[in-house]
Image (tube, rainbow, N blue to C red; front, side, top):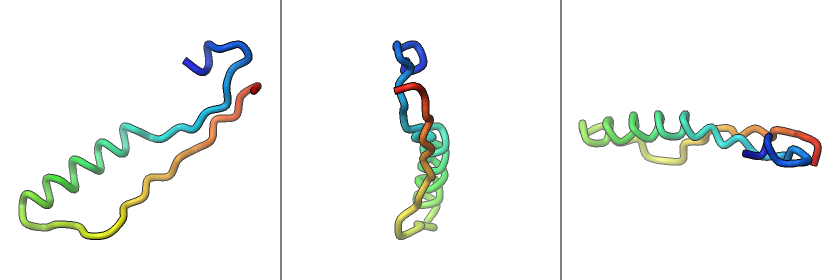
Length: 51
């Protein structure tokens, strides 16, 4: 959507697919009795466009 705007907007790519994948893995591990305590970071990337 940001690419279609005029001017194209600078955005942050939150890697939602990676967040979902890791969340599912952590959930399944916790259900299996192996919880992973703490904070789990997924890097975000700035997508610089013309704005």
